[in-house]
Image (cartoon, rainbow, N blue to C red):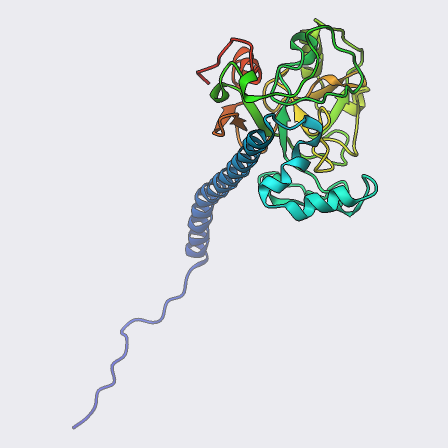
Length: 320
């Protein structure tokens, strides 16, 4: 019996250049559609991580208040919370160092870092932090009406009734669920025109009652500040080093809304405008004193934003 070999009746056919280009175009289009979704998903995870860190800090601050009957002082906030964050060893080491430039200055403490902030936490050579305590609505107009402040003033002397003080739960008469405890900042960089990472000195000094003038001046900083004569600190600034709890460095206020510029009042820190800022699209995370986190839009009404920062203003912000 004769075997018959089977073979194709048509010759082999390769991709034409046109077909190849169409295929690559389709793949490119799919990638263009998929990559933004992947990036949004990753940012969503980073924002959730950031919120989780803030809740841990809130639990630690409330545990401290339960132990001592009073919330921490602002200048020591992130240091004294360490034992309540299972970081007793770092706390002990920091206290044992002979000066502020000891080895712990260069540590990176993960719970103090928001993963959405892309620059290195060692950008300026020191370990830095993204989370800051709220010291109120602005000292020039409202005094120290937030959850945290520094009892030893840096610069200005307040008028009667506006002195900084340590806060107890009983002092938060607006309610813990209506009062800001912590928010975010973008860590200090070495670039003097990095608008949201640098605190600039205002060109003139404003007095008590002139907080709105300071806010307006600060909010009008151009996108290239140093080219227009604005001077900003590029070392030992926002969130740097991680234990720095000074005004504008480890503490922030609600003089301006989220993701707006930050200014000292000339060279005074306490009476400046120090804003919350983040890399989350459209706003910032805000931890309220009852330990729940809300995402706040950049477009929030400034009066609502300021009412959130007051612990006892009688101006409860229940819608934001």
